[in-house]
Amino acid sequence: MTQLFFYGTLCHLDLLELVIGRPLKPSDTRSVRLPNHAVYWAKDQIFPMIRAEAGSYAEGVIFEADQEAVDRLNYYEGGFNFDLEHIVPEGETNSVEVYFAQAGTWEFGAPWVLDDFIRAHGAHNLRTAKAFMALYGKLDRDQAMKRLPMLRAMAAKGWQVGESAANIKRAGLTTADVEVVHHHRAYDKFFAMDEITLKHKTFDGGTTDGFNREVLVTVDAVMVLPYDPVRDRVLLVEQFRSGAFLRGDMNPWMLEPIAGRIDLGETAQDAAKREAKEEAGLTLNELLPISGHYPTPGITTEYYHCFLALCDLPDGTDGIGGLASENEDIRSQMCSFDALMELLDTGEAQVGPLVVSALWLARHRDRLRAQVAG
Image (cartoon, rainbow, N blue to C red):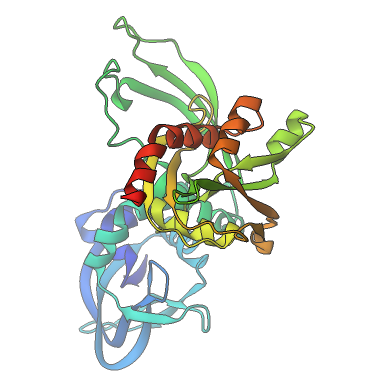
């Protein structure tokens, strides 16, 4: 058996159980203090680091680990550039192994508080860890780490949509009425593809036979249509879209609202403001919610948060933007409200969120302009 000292996220015992792949026994852990050490958040990260610091104590637990647990823990911790070192805790005669960050990997931030971590990040960290540890034995650690940003984003955003949606007109069936017979991740890079076999209750009270589905797994996205109610015009962006190209569309450059994925730790509103700055150099004023919706819920987990953004759109606001690091080449252009409606009539507005946003604006335009005039 190996004795490990945990001072950070693995003191959240629900997480420790998930990482080692089995329930903890009462004898597996005990609380101790590590003298002359202190624990701090890694700057701009959601995990801590430990360092030698005279006169301080690092609170934590000792875990008695068998070889399987050690292998799983190294798979989980090692990808963050942590190595094990031997330290003797207070009141102990034997050394324990402690995960220390490799020099220069991360900067130290504020003092670490486990309860703060659990309150702010515990739930989505458990979801991330579950998805990450599902790769154990299938992918090496470096390959798994390449998928971590997507797993984090999915855990923070992708699996939470719809929790507060009304369920009044529908029949009242919920996820409790679905049985997952088999679930396999067939592909996992920027997006993922899951293969599932399901059974579910039917409207007449019965149960379906098992059936197979493939689902494109991705995270929430934000769509924002900038609107200047004084000048009565919007800003659209135009960019190449590979899906339209592969379908054979002769014009695969699409007119769209500003759009992008919601990053870890962001709200939809935060992402809208960031994307507006990145894609069009815009500073948004008020964000008005248009809708939250699935574009194609039969084949993808993707969920859109759509907003109308009130802002100033003077002449010269349009131009070329986007992030070179993400291979973005984005042309923004002004469009009067009447010209926007013409795009709907001619069919040149082919992207669903633009159509939805334009129709919402048509419904509320008079009110928005009256508020500015008044």
